[in-house]
Image 1 (cartoon, rainbow, N blue to C red):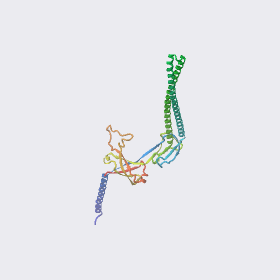
Image 2 (image 1 turned 90 degrees about the vertical axis):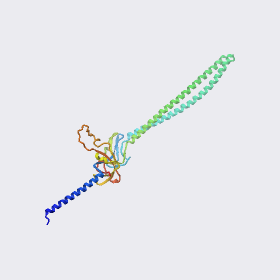
Image 3 (image 1 turned 90 degrees about the horizontal axis):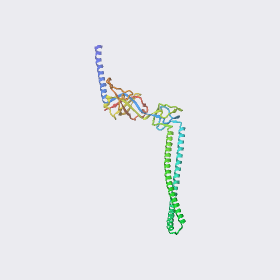
Image 4 (image 1 turned 120 degrees about the horizontal axis):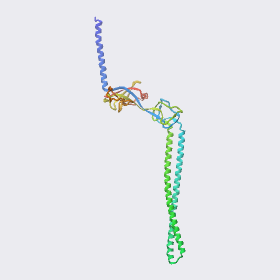
Length: 346
């Protein structure tokens, strides 16, 4: 018969042998896996978070959303009291109407001065004709008075008529030049008036833009969070009101050790496991690498210039794009969630 001691002696080597085999299998599997994959659990979900900021000040009139709900791009989320901005727009439009009226007046003045110029030019021609006639009469009487054919009085009258015609001609030329200058002045005034119209149009456009800012719209499609306003609250221009997590901006930031980067490059496939949903894997792809380590980008980066330091393996943030192959799963992801990533390097 076999004694119990002998049986125990046979069982122990068998158990040890099984453990050694299992350990060898586990070690070989881990070696084969690690030779083809690079893993890290120092990773989390990130996303494009768009802050919504008030561009004008005013009292909150309506809030058309609830926190943690989905909104669409260009959806009106908040309405501010716009009465002040409507009045400013009316004032700008009134100024524009006045400027346009001034343009009409200036154009009418140009037409009137142009007509005066034509009249003055005709007066010059008429005065020139009279002056030529008076000059001929004067020349004829000058010859006749030498021969005694006419009296001195008749000659003096011809001379006076010539001088009168000369003065009339000079006056007509001066009136024409003045009319031409008046046209130029009026045209300059029209240019100034047109500049005023442009300025008032800019005022109207600016007032319309300010009025449009009283309707605060969603800059992107996503989920609203961190609401910091209430109805009736006075907000100031530049004040942050809430944030929107972009639906299409969710990705993974994985902090790999610097010793792991040698095997990584853009385009490698990634398997992502979210701690909140450990039974579901998400496909991803290595996208790009941070230009600095996480420690270097911290508020107080380490300074080893003194030489008194302990060498620590640094980690480099790597951005991983999530493939949209499971939209239901993607809708569950929230920035800040912890994940584990496994990059297939072979």
